[in-house]
Image 1 (cartoon, rainbow, N blue to C red):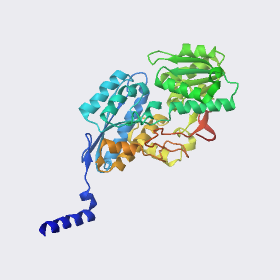
Image 2: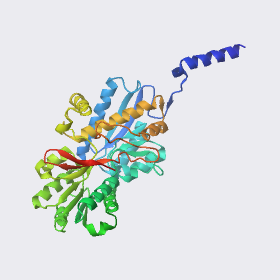
Image 3: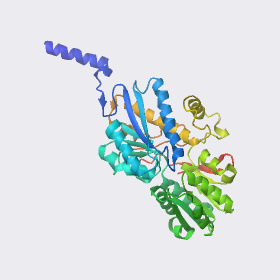
Image 4: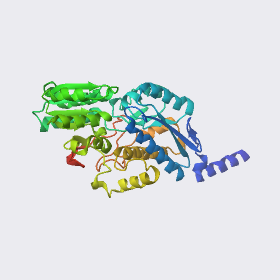
Length: 398
């Protein structure tokens, strides 16, 4: 009778106080007091401008920690420099996992760099979340279930522009500049898919460049002499500013399309805003420097954060806004995990983001990651740069 009475009493307590009865579950990198995350960033090297992402996110989690953390736990973000070098990415990622013992990685940057550690992280069952790359390899839940991207897929973007060309410029002769890696090949694949059986006829020249090259001037010169009247520019970092300036210098009167991830204020200013007039890209995000978003609640909240916590982040650059928005989504994922901070549960919530908003996304566009489809963004607007701001034209395309 005593045993039955004790059991009944404990059951009643559990019903009245479920939080007491709930079991806390942790994997390495999580505890009652801390959540440990890691990332690799190119703080040096050819893509060093992306280092803004790591610095902004470190500032974001400092703010969150001062406000009490996530479900009472402080977030430690360990951000290591890989210089956009895959060998250094491997070394740094192993340190994060085997030395620092992170629960997950988030917002690590680069297609070629993150591809170098994808099998390693998936083999260990460590979430490789919101990678700063639009490679199709981040939407392969069957083979790499632990890897998710943060950007629209390069294949999708190329396909959308290819279809736009068929509809609006059937006389197009296309010259392509692309990075000699998965990023460039994905864009070319998508463009060819969008053009369909017209691809071989419409693409008159393809020029590739390696990240180790000092300039892309020779590639732009070759494209301008190919007879192309449309320039499909899938370049990144310093090569964006170089290519825009070179097109202007050559007075090449081609319709110039720039991949959306490179259409940032900082890169355009580096090339000269007037030189960038007429650029086209697909649009899915708000540009913080645009007057049209001056009174947008999300932009105002970001600016308040930036001014207090990350004042070295340029106020008019979109990379910081992207970093802030990704960190906010990561915060929501961790909040949803509650006291079940296992890697499997983090992945579960990171891959169930149907209709999820993000401060940086344009109205009508949401994140829609599901267990069977990791493509985060599939809707866009077309945009044209007027020399000072991006103008969105037409309705949503999908």
